[in-house]
Image 1: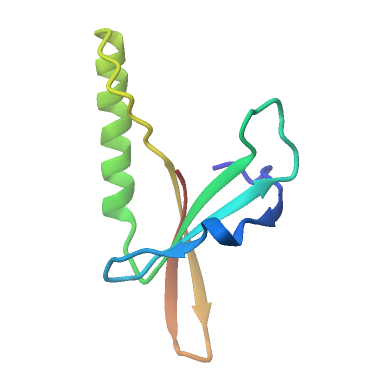
Image 2 (image 1 turned 120 degrees about the horizontal axis):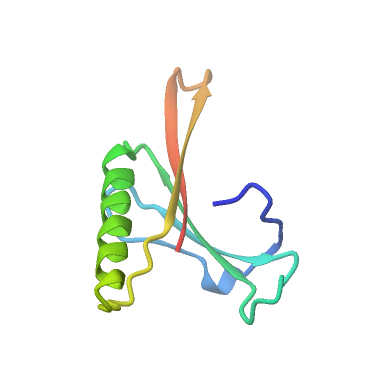
Length: 104
């Protein structure tokens, strides 16, 4: 995920709360610039309270395996997404929030 990505809006009809324990938020954002892309959507998942180390490791392994498969002319149509782990301290709750931004 690049910090240079600019969004111009949110497509509320495409946003949802996913059905899992942490109830991650699925957002569909619009790119501010199309940059030659036919689809200007940016899909983002926000997860709060998860430890993303396992997610990051799994995604890294999927990217490595996909590269090996592609070298063997085996296109399995994999699309491993990017994952950014951030840390926010909330003094009001006296705890920490961890969330991820994942581009699907």
